Image 1: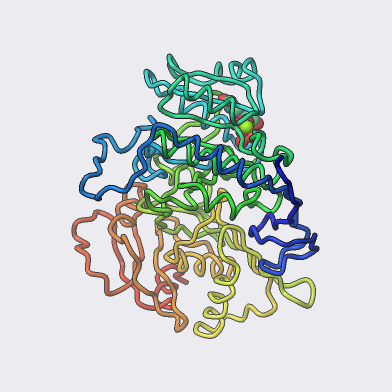
Image 2: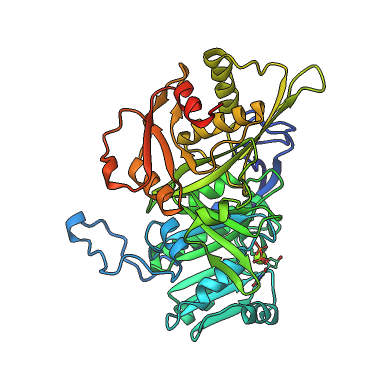
Length: 455
Ligand code: TYD
Ligand code: MG
C-alpha cells in the first residue's frame, strides 16, 4: 500500500516546511505555501524508471558519443529560431510562459502548422479538438502531419506520443494536465513539478522536443516558477501589452543559446506576424516638434533597433515629487537624474519626472542612458530635440559618456532608418567614413546637450 504524507511547499521558491506558513522564511513571500501530498517514493521511482526502457544509459566516453548531423530543428519562424539559439534542439524541454490571452496557443499552433511534412503533435488540456480546428482555420500553413488531441492525462498523452512518434510535441498547458503518480489536484505545484519532471525524462530518453505552455500568475511569474525553471532546458516568456498589438518573446533561461535575444511579433487577424524590422514599429511618425522625446539606438541580444524615449517633467503638485518609469529601471532613472542635477546643474528636486519607453518595451541596454537624459532635459526646457538625431551612450556618475558595445550596428541601424546624425561615445575606434550618416563623438553629457539644443 502506498503511504502518503503531507508537506507544505512555497510556490515561489520551492522551500519545504512540515506545517503551513504564512510567510516563507526563505524568499520572504506571503501566502505562497501550498499543501503537497508525497506519494510513497517506491512506486513513483518505479514508474520513472520504466520510462527509461529501451534507452542505453551506461556511461560512454565523450569521444564515442555521436552527435546527430542535424542538431537543430528549423521552426520555420525567424524570430522563434533566433530566441531558441538557432532552432529547437531535439530532446529539449521548452517552457513557453505568458499571461492568458497573450497568444501562446496561437504561436505554438501556428509554428506546428508551418512544419509541412514533419510529423507534429499538439495536445491540449484547455481546448477541444473542434476549438483547435477553429483556431487553425484562422492561421496559415500546410499542416499535413499535425496531430491534435484534447487530453488532460499525462500518461495518455505520452502513450499517444509513443504511437504517433512526432518530431515536435506541444502541451497546452502544463497547469491543465496531471499525472497518476501524485494525488495532488491538477494545476497544483506538485502536479506541475511532477509532470514537468516526467516530460523531461521522456524528452531526453526518446530525443523528442517538447514545448510546454505555462500560465503566469498575477505577479507576472510562472506558476511554480523556480521549480519549473530548474527542470526545463529553456524558458521563453511571451509578453506584451493588451493595448499594443505586438508581442515580445524573450528567453529567460536557455541551455542551448543566449538569453539576450528578443523576438518581436504582431498579432493579426490571421495569427502572429514576425516583425523583422522592429524600429519601424517602435518609432512614431508624428514626433517632430514635440518636446520630451529622444531616439536611442539600442541593442537587445545582437539585434540593433531604435526606440523612442518619452519624458514628462512637470512641477510637483504635492510635497514629494514623483519619479515613475515604464520600461526602464527606476533606480537607474534616479541615478541619471542625480547626474543631471549635480553635474549639469538642473534643479529637478521639485519636479515630477515620468519616463516611458514607447511601445511597452522593456530595455536593459545601458546605451540608452544618454537618450533618457536628453528626453528629460528636452521636456524640462520644453524645447524639442532635433528630430534627425539619434543617440547612444552610457552615462557615468561624473557625467561622462562611456563606450558601448556593437557601435557599428547601432550606427548602421540609424542610417538605415534615415537619421542624419548620431551621437556616440568619444574614443571608440571606428571608421566613420564608412557611413553616410554623420557620426559625432561626444565625451560629456554637457557637450551632447549643446549639440542637441541650439538656442
Ligand atoms: P491565445 O493564443 O488563445 O492566447 P493564450 O494561449 O496565450 O491564452 O490568443 C488569444 C488572443 O489572440 C485572442 O484575444 C484572439 C487573438 N487572436 C488574433 O488576434 N488572431 C488570431 O489569428 C488568433 C488565433 C487569435
Ligand atoms: Mg491558450
